[in-house]
Length: 235
Image (tube, rainbow, N blue to C red; front, side, top):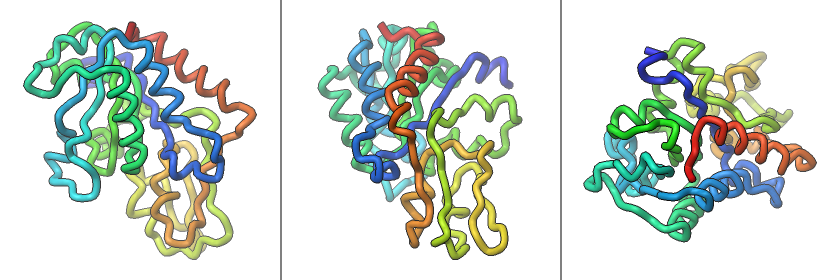
């Protein structure tokens, strides 16, 4: 299964802009995704998110689909969406952030297969995810070697403060089951956490904080961009 569907994949969750609100100068999704939008030779926007559509999602916009970039995207069936400009792609990104969606960026062999395009090394996926995301739903039941292909961005930390009262809301919304209750307070499993920030957004006591060391901000963005460019060429 790994060889057929996931071999060579590298996907990173970019934390929610709203979850990073205490670091107001940081705009991780915008910096990383905009880099690839500007560099890409071709951009294809899906007319709808197939995950939200299949799940009859009512919380987030179904018409905000995945963005695919690179030469392989030229071969996507035009009935699934349309080609968009750099400006349109950036506007899509801003809309995704305002909607509270989580960006998942990288190479995903599964997309190459279901879209029927080649080569996978020329196809970059940018998903705008909510809890309906098919990869999120699968991750908890995938083997560790496959699940480990979904990364947390280096430098992102999720912490629980003393304000936590163990209500369990975050447990219900963590797609990886990375949060548990210990002594009637939430505890985060750092190895399982992908730093998306959803728990930060839904905590009723604002007891969870997502932080990023601002001194490493551009370095970590450049490192992530470099890792993705090693396996995907969008030019």
